[in-house]
Image 1: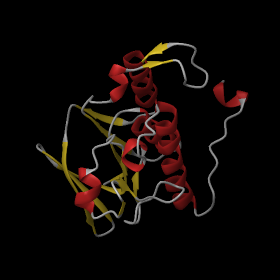
Image 2 (image 1 turned 45 degrees about the vertical axis):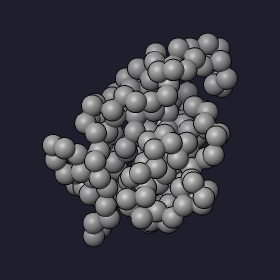
Image 3 (image 1 turned 120 degrees about the vertical axis):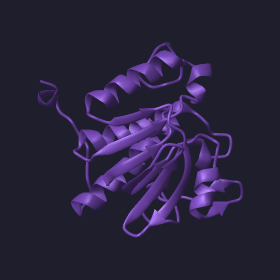
Image 4 (image 1 turned 90 degrees about the horizontal axis):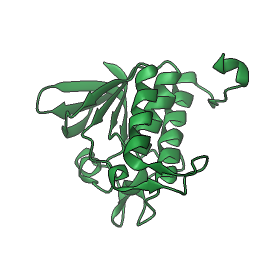
Length: 184
């Protein structure tokens, strides 16, 4: 069993994976490369003057890979379910288990619906930490927002979900704050 499974390889999913893996949680990402970032060009992402969306995704993938994320590129998730102490994620090839689940599938809310997460109208209902009505299952990005689909917002949603997972694991509020000495 892995600690965290992330379904989706756009800004929300890769941000969640970065935070969890960087801080020692075994993390698997299922990425079918269907992110809207391939249609985007970033002019409004803090710290980036101008960046092609596909190049941004490639950089983000390299970053999570450096922290040891098990990235299952091209392996589509066909189902998710609560299972005892966590979740079972099903693909055409196999089943995987994790203690935590982060859904980052853009506006596709089918997996959240299959999981039994509550909805508020057309969007998945989450708390401020992005946790759904299903304990330890998180929804991020466009699946929780009506028409507010910005990469920077989605990345923040993924980070919020990851920090909540890390806080649960630590038993207290977790802060991922690096200093220049950490980069050495």
